[in-house]
Length: 405
Image (cartoon, rainbow, N blue to C red):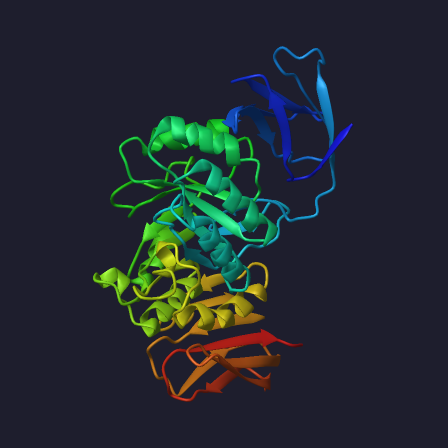
């Protein structure tokens, strides 16, 4: 019997445009449709439960077919949980995303450019990349390359119903995929179509300001917003009670528009500000004369300074304790916390000489993070009721406090 790991990919060749229902021994079922790839009709399916699955194929002499789902070797696809993101196995998920929109995916040297970009992504602090759905075959190859590198892919979909149906049927079985729609009058209908075709239940968002398109309906799993003032994150989390992804806050670069010509200090502080307010903020880079053109327009590697300086944020995100949430105890600086045991405060452009925290009695590890210079000064402090952290009085500082006893 065929064996597929949990959250892996089952691929079955069929005779034409057909659909089938996969049924687990527990009674759970999932619907899938075929798609055309290189003159072959295929059905793909991502099993979510271990055990035996059965399915029937129109015209097949074998009825029903069956396969075994073995234990997972990954944490599974991304799910929304309240205002946070988690993997399907419950693991907290804190993505660090960049934008890579190839402007000519079928042009000369496109494959080599993607190969170089994929190597750059694998060596970067980014764990998620936004891609544009220009060519189904090339996009599928990109998704597979990213899956092998442990990187998630958000697909910015076209507004064409047949194209969306083909892309979802083709890619939904890959656990590293999520969907994003543009703001069009048909967005609600297209989101419902995705939910119908995608038995893997991947994330679905519409990239738009909330005042343009309401992101509240349940078929949108999270917000994908353009936002320059990251203080607005707090209100979005409160008003919609969903994860907030700021997928366009601007680009570090020397482009001809305000959005593509941010100083690196400005982009870096926007990403930190939004992150510590509880959002997930996407990086973008637009240096016109960089190798292969701007990174976010399909360049071969990021050449700006922000991508490298985000390594410190990646380290912080990887060590965040479960249950961390923004708190209002310190209203003059955004703060993530598990009250009493963990605090992360970002000071941005302020040049505070010191900060005082009210903490339970105990011993704490205190890290002063220089976000711009990528340095960490660490001390160990014994606290009775308050802790005053001395700072260098410069911009772009963050404070991380972890209870040691």
